[in-house]
Image (tube, rainbow, N blue to C red):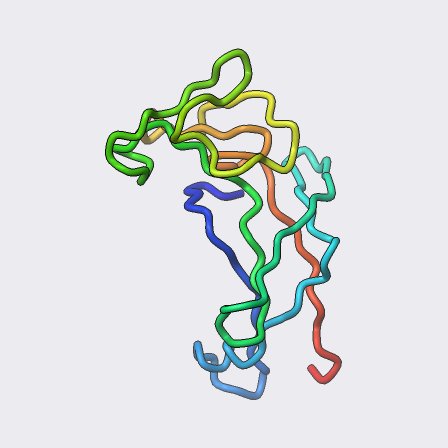
Length: 149
């Protein structure tokens, strides 16, 4: 899961076994995602295929692909969420998130409610079915492994 969800993106990289393990080595071999295969898998082993969002332009290393973190963060106030000062916060009203500091985008599943994330370190530590500081499951990707490895 994503215990401290700050959004962003990610990619997978390998370093050949006959090379010294350095950042430069990993930057030489970014792996390509198998598009259309991204899934969420919950801790109870249920899963759902989701539409991944991939970025190919302006990435590093040049020509590589990054995947966007598909789990939106839940922000409740500007003090602890990193939102701009004066943010109106966020509340769950009749099952719908309301307020300028709520999720940055629509979650990839039916997000029916929010629950405390143990251990609660602040009043904002919550997760939904697929939002917030999500520890209820994992994002699953498939990547292409080069034939010459």
